[in-house]
Length: 232
Image (cartoon, rainbow, N blue to C red; front, side, top):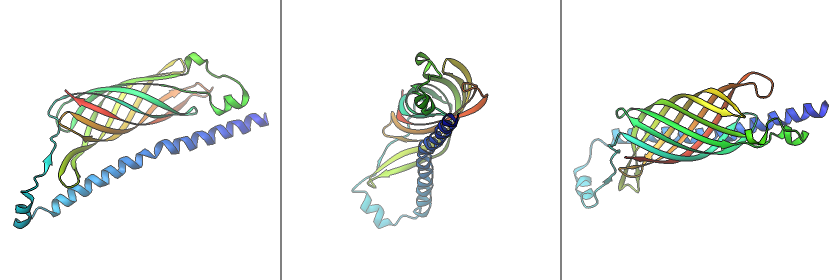
């Protein structure tokens, strides 16, 4: 019994540490937010352009990439998923969306992952879940909002549009042989590399209830991913 308690305590400590690791990308999203705000501030300060500077810049025109005009988007991504009590695993996913207007969009996505034994299972040489049930699959559909649309600059000669967004979705998660209603909150940052391609970083929280370990509880499963979107 004493060894089981120690194992459970170690498992909880490891799970907490893994959550801290998966939450690190949130700082990246916040950094992008502050960077975009700084760009808007710089634009406001530079509204008065000196005539000599304007003449000098004519010899080296600024290359501007437009925000994609297409309303249909498809994409694929790769990332890391922290499954509560089961550690961090890699995840693959795909998404498809429709832009209602410049700020609002509808998006559906699917993802697939697998998880290994917990530290408790490894230490006690037991299997709480059959090997064929160690899958994590989810799908959902939701509404997104582009909070802040701005632009980044590359070597002061290339203007690259970008956007910060939030999203809320509902869907289903197949986890350890059970299907669970899932609520998803997400925040991300997208850079438009061309008129048809966007590079997107996103962090998500998959929330659902489970009694897998004998106690009915609400779990938070954090994900960070990056991928490419095609506007068609």
